[in-house]
Each structure stands twice: as C-alpha cells, then as structure tokens.
Length: 640
Image (cartoon, rainbow, N blue to C red; front, top):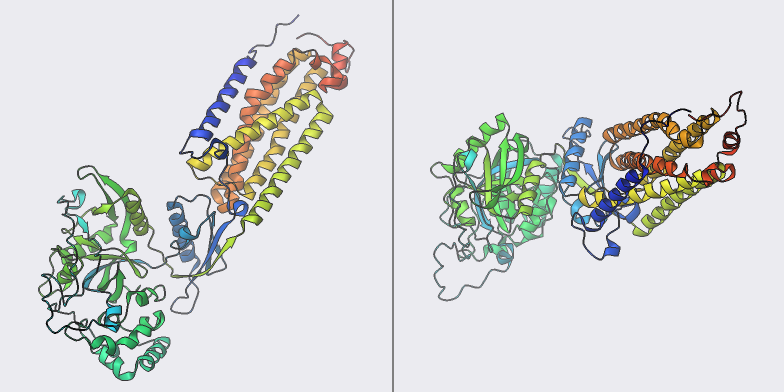
C-alpha cells in the first residue's frame, strides 16, 4: 500500500487565517479611516454618479485667434490638468473626457456643484506687479456723501476720507530658508481704501492711442459703450489719469454714473486704465468680464481682490515658469506656507521680478499701492492672477533667487488650495462653462437596483448549475461565492473611505464578470478531482492530488485575468477604470477564498460519509465505481 500524499494540508489553520482576515477587514470597515455615524450606517460603499446621482459639467474651449479649434495636444494637456484639479479636491474616479474637438466633460458623483465650478478656470497663471490700488467705491461714486459745512480732518494714513486699512500682522522675519527671502502674504483689507491723492499715477495711454489695431468686435463694443454713456462722458473718462478723488470732486460720481450700467463684455472693451480710473466701474462688473479677459501677458490689466481694485503691470512670469507648488509646515515658525519652485528659465524671470518689486525705481507707484492695500507694507506687491481673479498678492520680502515661500495666516486647507491653484493653473486653453446638469438620484437608484438584480441573477444561475451538476460540491461553490461577496463588500467600504474609490455601474459589471472567473476555478478543481478518482484514486487521496494539479491552472487563469485588469486600468479613464479595478479586486479575493476556504473545506468533506455517497457528493458513477472496486477503463481501484 502506498504512502499518504506528502504535504498534507491543515484545513483548520487555513480557515482560521480566513476568519482573521474577515475580522480585520470588517473592523476596518466599521471603525477605520474616520468612520462616523451609527454602526448601521457605516457599511455603505461610496457610490458613483450613475448610481447615486451627481453633477456633470461641460466646458467649451474658446476658438483661437485664427478661428480654429485648439489643437488636440492642447486639449489633452487641458484635460490632464483639469483632472489633476479634480483629484486635488479629494474626488476619486471622476470622469474627465474630451468630447469632439472643443468640449471637456467633467462628471462627479454626489453633490458636486462646489467642486466643479472652479476646475474649468482656464486662463494661464500670471505674476504681475501691483502698480496702483484703490477701493471699490462704485456705490459711493453714484451716491456720494453730502459734504458737511466743516468736514473733519481725515485720520492719519487715510486718503480722501476713505477709511485706512488695518495694520498687517507682524512679519515672520524669517530669511525665507532656501529662497534667500520670503513672500509675506498681504492681508485683505476689511474696507479697501482709495489710492492716496498724492500718488503719482502711472502713464496711461488713452484707448484711442493704442498702436495695435482694434478688432472689429471690440470696435463695435466701444461704439456701443460711447452711445450708452454718451460721447462727452466717454471722452472725459478717456482723459482720466488717476482715480477720481470723490472728497474733492463729489460730482464726479454722478458724472460717470452711466459707466455703472455697462455689462461685463462692454467693460472689457475699455482700456485697463479706464477700467481702473473710472470710479463707477465696480468690481462686480470687472468680475463679469469674459474668461480670458486679462490673459494678455504683454498688457497691463485691472482686476480686484477682496473689494480692492488694482491696476497690474504686464506679466513678467507666467504659469509655465512654475515647476511645482506645495503646502509645507515651516517647523521654525510653526505655520503653514506655500513653497514655489520654478523652472530654470522661470527662476531667472522670477528673480528679476522680485528684484524690481523689492527695490522699486524712483517714482514707481507700486509701493504706494502696497501701502494702500496694507498700511504697514514696506515693499511692493506681486499679484498671482488666475483668469480674472487675484488668488494671492504677497508682499516681496527680498530678491528671491531660489525656492520661494508665500507666508501668511494659512491653515492646512487654505495652503493646499493655494498650492493647487498655482500648480494646476497653467491651462493652455481658455474655456467657457457651457452646461452643468444634475443626474437624478432616482435614476441612479434604479440603475443600482438593476445592477444588483443582474448580479443576483448571475449568482443564482451559477448556484443552480452547481447544485444540479455537483450536488454537495455545489454547497462549496455557493459558500465560496458568499464569502467572496462579503470580502468584496468590506473591501469596497474600506477603499471608499481610505482612497475614495467609488462603485459605479461599470464596477458592478466587473464583479458580475468575476463570477464567471470564480466558476471556472471550481470547474477546474472538481473536474480534476473526477479525473483522479476515475484513474483509480480513493476520494481521500484524490482531493489533495487534484488540488496540487488544479492549483497551477487556477493560478495561471486568475493571473491572466488580473494582468488584463491592470492593463485596462492603466490605459483607460473614468468608469472603465472602475470596471477594471472591480474585476481585478474580485479576482484577487477569489484566489484568497480558493486557497483559504475551498481546498480546506474539500479536505474536511473528504473525511465525511456524505462525500462517499455518489448521490450526495455529485461525483456520480466515478465515485460509485471507486467505492465498489469495479474496473474503470481497464484499471482497478487502488490505494495510493
């Protein structure tokens, strides 16, 4: 009589390991990664847009100057940067795709309105020195205060009766570490003051004196503006060389009041100097200008920050000059900062700009502008501009020839937000938001129910086939599928909280496909078991021998499936990635169940009386012939 098979397994140990995995995974699902709320509500995987509803926004790229659509390379770069912005918001499996030759569609699950509204900001990042600053006094200009008989003297530091800005916080005084200097973030004034009357205005060419040809559409807008406000008032506004001091000229507000009725595109037709000097043009109107209105790096521009209207210089550093931006905790100062690293060419430009701001030339109004925004400023400001918005206007604290830091009263969230805006701000294409629609949660629930119904039908068909063909062995199949499903569910909950993985309808499809992969491994093992018994092995010896031979095939088949899922995940985007991830995850968990449950439970079954019954076990005539010692294909049954 032959010896028992070598390497006999210990099913109790393997089942104990599987139980330990279950306990750990469900403890993580219940209590790990910031789980909150009642216990009954913690076991909920993160659902995708097509299952729970959400928001979908479409951005349309503006035509280039030659009337052509942007190149595919530019669109792909814009798609990649917008996707990076979405991911930086902590959103996972957002679908960012190019449709046609001009549209980029962004889809987010859940309440995505707030997340989507800024990801399509498409202007190039610009770094511009602040030349002049004044308050947004449009409302006061239209309804100026009536002067009293004996007006009181303005407070020291005020200009023309406008309240002075609050004193800034004490500078950190650091050397800037790696950069040889530090950017001090200028605090936004609670009530932005107007520019001091003594400030020497920068030379401002009149709109009609531009050397560049005026586009036809802009000529039509200018003519429309002249007609709307009146030719005489327009001509008077074009001659302004400084913001109107309403304290000394209270009637100017009413004189230029028609400018307050202009739309954003009409304001955009005016020169930057008119936009700044005319007191009745408000920040709301400036913010209403089309996207890309101040993208021209070779032109001065007017824009606003926290209610302060600013005239900015030409852009001498742009977004493509930035290598990276990151939030960091300054260990010495104990505060959050935003660290900037520039490309080799960009560093030279940045050093020149900071030198110009740190040591302004005689007669430069940038220092006066900095003091108008922050009364304690001792150096000029450089505004970081994205689209029509100043996202930061730090005071330059030195000539920066290396890594630079923006300091201020940052929190971890605000530092990360500013770093992301700077890092992902250099889009090569200007976009207009076209549509933003909400996918009904009701429709998502219907799709979820349909997906779960399809998964249930698939599992039921596999179970029916298994019980019909394998009988007792069908119980092993059914229990294995239940355990795989429970493991997969706990993994989805844990991954949803830890990595933001969202389950979509495509993901459910991946899990349904994995049922077929799991069924294949059953068939391989059980048919190999039949072959072993058919060749003359006893049931007890056939189980480990069948496992040893089937194991290689099972591992090879599942490895091919996992490799295909990995390749599909790498080369695809959006929900297709969700399908690939679900397929790979379920295949890996199926292997865990195969090794830690299916084979151990079969080893236990092999020692039971039911396993030796052809009717109960499902091994049929093969087992009957083996147990009765009848000839099988010319051989006799023998003990291994």
